[in-house]
Image (cartoon, rainbow, N blue to C red; front, side, top):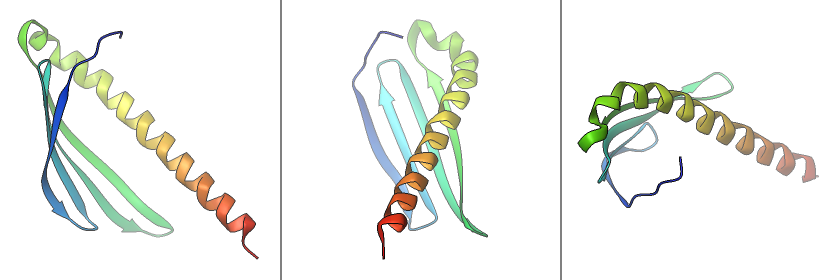
Length: 96
């Protein structure tokens, strides 16, 4: 959207290999979230749960930001999955 802001991220929980929790703060938002990783047949299921709150004059737009953010998160994790699976396919294709 053309703007930037400094952010501070703190890891608030870590239970390898199952869970990573974090807290992110900036002048425009506060986000608390958890990533969960569960083994499933053929891979790992990733779940995320975020509590996002906009600050200041943008605070009333929090529901809209949450809706937009869910779509963005889904794209981010889907892109990472495709990238990692592409790397794995490249690695196994080169193996003899």
